[in-house]
Image (cartoon, rainbow, N blue to C red; front, side):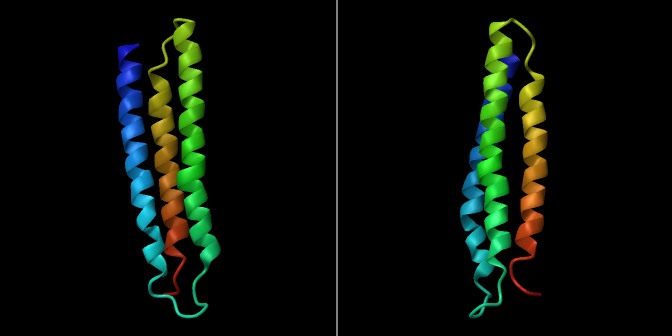
Length: 102
């Protein structure tokens, strides 16, 4: 139980860091002219990192609470959620790399 709480705390802090980092993604459009950039990719990056990442955190947290109430080990849930979050972040970075024309 203690490991689950510690791991979820670390996962939550990392997620907050990623959410703060995503505030600066709009700077990817600084090099854009009148209509050169693909703003849909920027929107997709925000959805992947912020929205879906938050949903993954909440779902894993709810499932962990249910498992802990049943006295079942749940330490693996923040690890799984963190791995999914890394995948979402990498997918968001891939989308973000295509915003401004090369």
